[in-house]
Length: 629
Image (cartoon, rainbow, N blue to C red):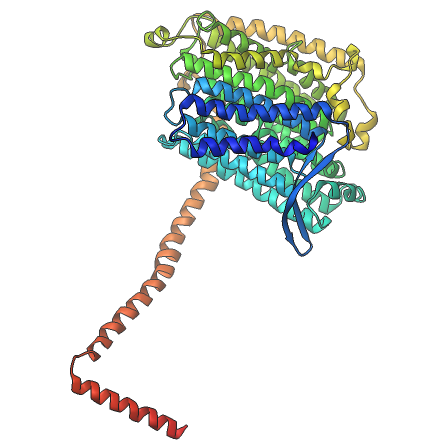
């Protein structure tokens, strides 16, 4: 069965080819169902591989891709514990997003083209998680970057969306340069790019060797771009320009988790580079609390959810920074469920509101959109960590692991968790409670979404409710199924092998978390579910709220210190180097040719006598030259 693993990425690729080349003549729904069935086929094969996996990693080599001198790079796939978990997440959640998209994008004129892009996105993400070496991984890495550009700018007639797509593409290229340099340094150091050859060799290196630190930092730069960490995070909120299913696909199951996956895959290298792990901890903690501080004042439903993605990604990186690799993947898994649910539920709200995304113009949707309300509530309870929903287990596990290693990071994440509860409950109550604040026309057209949209929401709601039970803590007498499954392919820092948080601390942490959540639920409901909504306009906000609402002006800062100087420099180069030097040189050659041809043309006078004279003169000159030479 495992030899059929190549079919997992092959089906979405086939779906892309069918829908891509057939977009002009395939009926809308046919194209959508073909694309969805291809991802379903990949999911079913992944399930079969997971069910029959015997714990021994298997490398499936399809062909030699690059073979030049000492450089040999096979196009091959690695099937192990990590890739199997990621395959289930990507194909499972990806399939639900495909089904949802059939209803959401039904009226779009480029319906089939949209599904061709979705299939291509899934194909490249599967390459990324299945690759047995850094080159195949990097191919998938670049592919999802390309597809994100196509999907974010899908509605390209709006130039703002094109700018958002460009921003995502360019900022990811910054990170990808670091990643590529890291791969080059890996090859120089180890003589190969294959995981099964690199990781055993890395064991011979002492802790914090400069070359290993350099490799891991360069790889982490790539992760910072793809997984939206400070300072390369500003593209992700702007990625909301794409259709809502794209937001769910990018934020939940695929692109932004690529950086987490890469670090976990390279855990052997990171475990012998504690310095890099410290950097990851600091960056992750800063990203988590900074993005949460922005989310707390946003008024666009998708922007709030965008920052609620950046913040949990910071949580995951902090977990990686303290060596809790399986805990980070546990949160990746639960996050995939509830974040896909929240984005798709937000899409259902936007669909019912005829395209409106401003939560200040919503309210009272609880009765109008009952299914959407119920699943959004489950997603909200899951993301804030209310028991027994998914993040209650995964987020508290991160906090417990971080407490052991870094008390400052623990306090930062604890504050972030409180902020997360506040801004998510604020979003929930403003959207579904109180009185409707939109226009009469919007209220008249309010309606629940079709079954193609609500059925995936119900499935994701169930997963968000029970997903946390993959990692029941020992304090409850459970066994961490995911941790036990992943343990054979993980190498932990020595300090983390023997030290665990006490059961007393875990119980106290859970009790305090639940009490705080109950207080925040009551407080936010009282504040945001009444008739008069306290969402101020810019002039009425406090200084902090104004800075938060404007995202602390980081985009403006980047524009001032990076974009404008580059534009000015490019204009100088254009006017001086391009026009005066390069164009001047080319034009001078042109002028010289034209001028000389104008002079020489006088020789062609049409006078036969002159031609005879010139011929005789030429013969004499040739004879004279032969004579003297």
